[in-house]
Length: 131
Image (cartoon, rainbow, N blue to C red; front, side, top):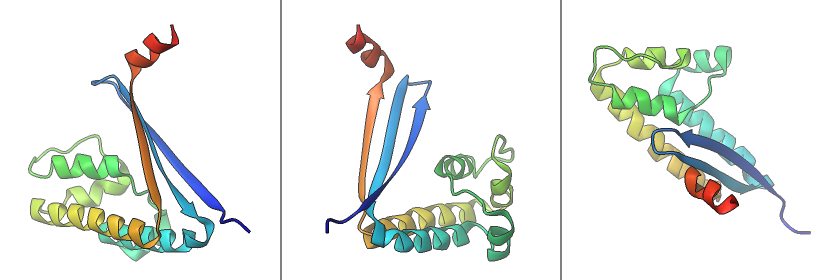
């Protein structure tokens, strides 16, 4: 029997550069538990187990990037509620967590043997091609 895979996709549109991106991973069904365990470990770098259990926060790298980019500012705004506690930490702690998250994510993807892929499209070129 052939291996069965699950495909996870996410998309983003960047209005300032007029680009559209879609990225994802393909993972063997048998490795999903490795991925889920790794994601839970990553969440624990940001939130307490109690908070995770009570709120089931979404690990959203855009939010993490906002907090990281503004970590030296006294006024970080526009960040989702589940990241508000992270904002209150010292800049050095935010930086440490940020790099730990990406390091752990990288380890998790390797351990789960996922295939990562992406496509970035300049939106105007797509319209030009369709004409």
